[in-house]
Amino acid sequence: MNKIAVAAITKHGTQLARRLYHEGLPADVFYMQKFARGDEDEKGFTLFEGSVRKQLPTWFEQYDGIVLIISLGAVVRMISPLLKDKKIDPAVVVIDDNGDFAISVLSGHLGGANHLTRQVASKLDATPVITTASDVQGTIPVDIFGQSFGWTIEDFTHVTRASAAVVNEEPLLILQESGEKSWWPSAKPLPAQMRVVSSMEEEALQEAHCALVITHRMLSDSDRNKLPHIHVVYRPKVIHIGIGCNRGTEAGEIEAVIRKTLEKWKLSPASIKKIATIDLKKDEKGLLEVCEKNEWPFVYYTPNELNRVSIPHPSDVVYKYTGAYGVSEPAAVLSSGNETLLIEKEKQGNVTISIAVEEWE
Image (cartoon, rainbow, N blue to C red):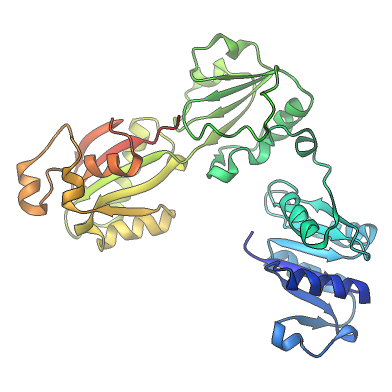
């Protein structure tokens, strides 16, 4: 959560807002002009007059999380006209005027209100109030499953129904083909109604009411027909792309090769974790533009580092110009930590591409 606002409209609420600041909550503090203490400019606090209702539309646009030290009923009435979608609404947390309770009100999972609630409660020695069923039960939160690892949901169509299936303890299939394995959030054993499998061929596909699918592959119609109708696909960040290119290659050509290769091999762009190359290309304009545009992390290695990797297609010609016997293949291996390439060197125009998939025990 990048930006948090804390707002109060009473004397006691102002004391709590200031306390949160002094306890280290990284937030912008707002309270009414009549409770000014004279140090607001020094501390960066903002004073306002009139109804807090007038401030809320701006805060909804500018902040990821909003902590309101105001009665719950008043907050519900004030924010209701501002609500758009749980995927974009900010987290809203309410604290009572005595600081006894911190209540997660809006965007508990996707917006991070549940986490923010626990955070402010710990700083005030308050009781966190969280009513999200998956949090209460200590089970899988479907809408943010794997979020801490960087996983993204491909399509939200079935998220609500899948969430209901999880909290109602219906038979659930977790099909994991890639990604981090340490996703179960509890020390207790996985519930009996949940079954984890690693491939589409497992018999369990027919027994579940819904499925959570963790894969870097694009699913075919045949794949989807094997799954329960209610299923959610997660994209873990596991694809490492090694790139070699001629000096001056345009960004458009590099990106087209990446997209074409992913499409050919039925791989999801959402699972790209890093683009890797040789250090001679660390300032390659087209490559940097592609990575910046798509927010793909960019890494590079020295010829000596690349030459330590055994690759299928070493090249004396490449060595002559770069000092390395290969670029795309060893770069993909080093970036992923996987010595086995999923896609060996492919030459397309001015670009050479290789792909490796990060593996997790």
